[in-house]
Image (cartoon, rainbow, N blue to C red; front, side, top):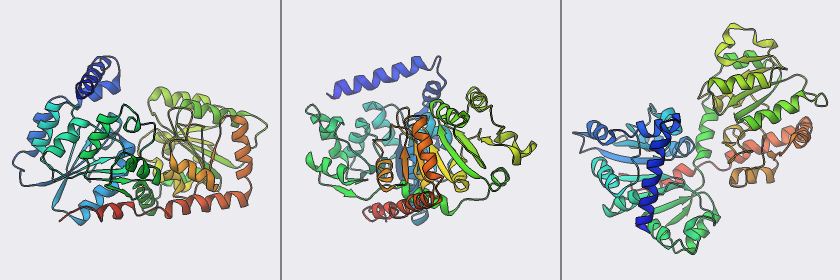
Length: 415
């Protein structure tokens, strides 16, 4: 099985090198790993006495889960240095200048040789993998050197290969972890069922992160100028199918959307996509954020955010939010909106996200699969009492679940 795993990883790497010839994201993946060991040695040379804590995240979402732990360790234990690795360009390219980490790199492809070389150079005192990254050569190398390894905000599902009849080899690799810090009871029971005892239900560190954001946002004058006294709906991390649904709803004369404005924050902000959003909402007065200083925002109805990093702060101006991704692989982060008390709406593909299921059950979130269902929810939220109740539910949902970071740290032997 180890041979097949290593062969699969090798073939995956080859495929990405081929894709890099014509795909910009694959090119970033490949280029970011060129001469990586030389760069690691250069950064870490003459630092053999440093106490390094290594955090690995797949991408940006996992980084946001690891971030509260990184920053708490940095503030409480400044004697430690943080090394942060990413698998995906969508995480690395956005956070490569993150001030909370001392060293930031792509993770070299998971081969036995790379894993040994990487761990030898870094020589971490502690290792944290976030949520669901399981690169088995790295896990084994860390375990072989008796370095404490933890999984943070872990979540497991019965469909994963660990719990299948053929999953014996994969189950065995999980014994490399010193402890699992899990999001929910279901994950706890699944790991127990395969003989893992070092499990703790600590919750999801994202709640700590989004709550912190809600307490530290700064005013955005252009957003305030745009909103005025209007009801404001934030469309966050939208994809074309989300945008088309909302455009069809707004363009339908049967739907009244008076004294309301829209901020659209597309998941992809390439010029072609921004232009397609402008065209799709051309029946309204649309303004791009990058050009907003030159126009009168008071009369604009749609503001399109064409940069990265503003979304979590924009939610504080909203009345309700539509979160994208639900017509694709799955919804994006709904907690960033919920922490500000925004009822959230999203597409039908949300089942793998516990926070979405729980908020729907409580009445703070709503799923729609078409224009008719969207109209029904908008009509429902036009009732002030319903809106007020959903707002309270969303905010309290986040507040009631903060504290995972401190729970995790209570188990970690930091000195």
